Each structure stands twice: as structure tokens, then as C-alpha cells.
Length: 181
Image 1: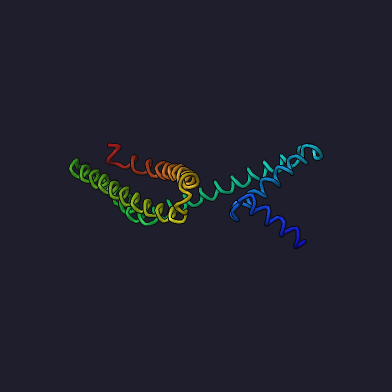
Image 2 (image 1 turned 45 degrees about the vertical axis):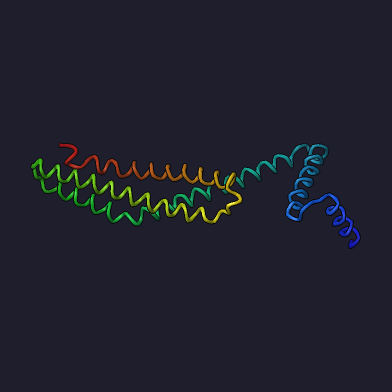
């Protein structure tokens, strides 16, 4: 057995393989042999299992990115939930008083506008900080492919979460008395 490993090491040195390239090479050759055996002896059943495994692995990675994006958005939103709640509470309390003064309505609209602008600014600042913290974990040498894919998926899922948040808060704000009078 020692002679076999010694001969394999000599062959690897002659071919000029680096140690980090040996494992992917062995995996590629093993998969090629497996597919050739599958074609000849197993009637392509192994090919289906390999594609199924790849599909499950990709689905797990995408679900993980989805959860990380959702957690990041909710963490950034959690910090600003007090401001959102305060603006909605003040607006609904004002609407409950039944005042018909246009100056007061204009003041409340201005307060809502400035509050929403501030909340959006702070939210995106917190989201940018969280995204930078998440991207720190990916090494710089992998930027071309893996980091771009992760960032694109992260942005797509972040936009999906932001759209959901907008769809929940928009009816609350648009049905306030200062916008329906």
C-alpha cells in the first residue's frame, strides 16, 4: 500500500499538480468514471441522483442567503421600529381628535414626510453597515464569481423584504385622515 501511495505522489510531482488541485482533480475523475459506469451498467439512475443532489445543494444555499437577507433587513428595521410606531401613533391619535384645521393637517403631513425620510435614511445606513459586515466574511480572492452571486441574491431578497414591508405600511399611512379628507 505504501508503494502505491509513493507511486501516486511521484506521478503527481511529475505532472506538476499542486496539492490544492489534487482533490478537485480526483473528484472530477471519480465523477467521470461514475457517469461512464452509470451509462453502461445503471441505466442513468446515478445521473438523476447527482442532479437531484446538486439541486438540493443549490436550494439550501439560496434558502440560506434568503434567511440571511431577511435577518439583516429585520435587524435594521428593528432599530427603527420605534420611530415608525411613534409616527403612526401620533397620526392616528391626531385623526381621532377630529380637528378640521388645514394648518394642522399640513403640519402632520410635513411631520410624516420628514419622519419617513429620516427613517428611510437610517434604515439604509443600517442596512449598508450590515451588508458590509456580511461581505467581510467572503475572501477578496473570490470576488469575481461567488461574491457577485451572493451579493445579487442578497439584493434581490432584500428588495423582496422591503417590498413586503412597504405593502404592509402603505395602507396604514395612506388611510390616515389627513390624506383622505
